[in-house]
Length: 133
Image 1 (spheres, one colour):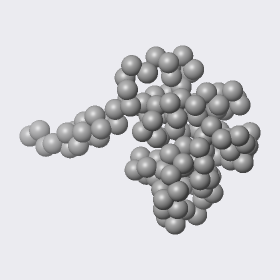
Image 2 (cartoon, rainbow, N blue to C red):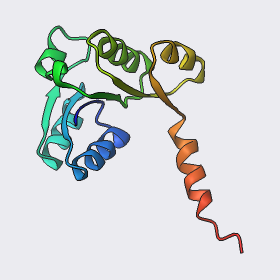
Image 3 (cartoon, rainbow, N blue to C red):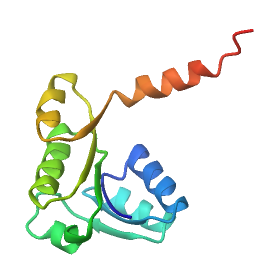
Image 4 (cartoon, one colour):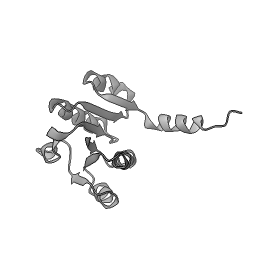
C-alpha cells in the first residue's frame, strides 16, 4: 500500500514507523524543516518539506498512486486541506486527527475517518493495562 502522511510530529512519525514495519511505501509531507529533516534521518522514505497547499506538492508526492492519506498535524485547517485534496484526487482512504471536536462533522461530511483527541485514546489504552484482580 502507498501512503502519504501529512505531518511529522510525534504521531505522524510513529505512524510512519508502523507503516514501514508492515512493508508499506510511505511519503511524508512536513512544513517544518527541522521535523522533515529528523524524519528523513530516522527513516529511508521520501520526505517533502512543504506546505500541503503549495502548488504541485501532491503531484510530487505522487497522489495518483496513493491508497491512503493520513493527516496528523496539530492544525485542523491543514488536516482539512489534506483531506479535501485527497478526496478531490480520488484517494480511497482518508484518515485524520482532529484537534477540535467542533470540526468533526465537517471532516465526516467528506467521508474522512477521524481520530478525536488522541490523548484520550492513549490514556484509555494505558488505563486498560490496569490489573483489575
